[in-house]
Length: 99
Image (tube, rainbow, N blue to C red; front, side, top):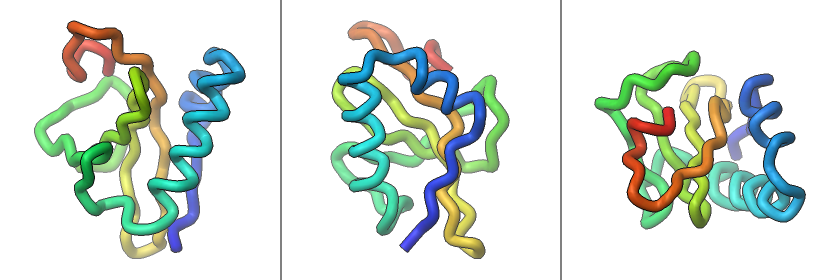
């Protein structure tokens, strides 16, 4: 099992979302990233070529939760998932435009 660590910038982004989406996002993070966070699924993918504006350890991973994206990286040795950013992705926008 992996430990989830949410960095201060991502905590602030979560605080700025409505309670409904905040609960949805936190539940998805707990359910999807505690076990096998680096396994590609329908809602998770590695963004190896992405260079985001936030601090991170390559590669950056993306968890899709409805119109929201949770960006994270994984320390396999320490078994820590670091949530780096939580952003809404409006329809018609590319991932690179929201990071």
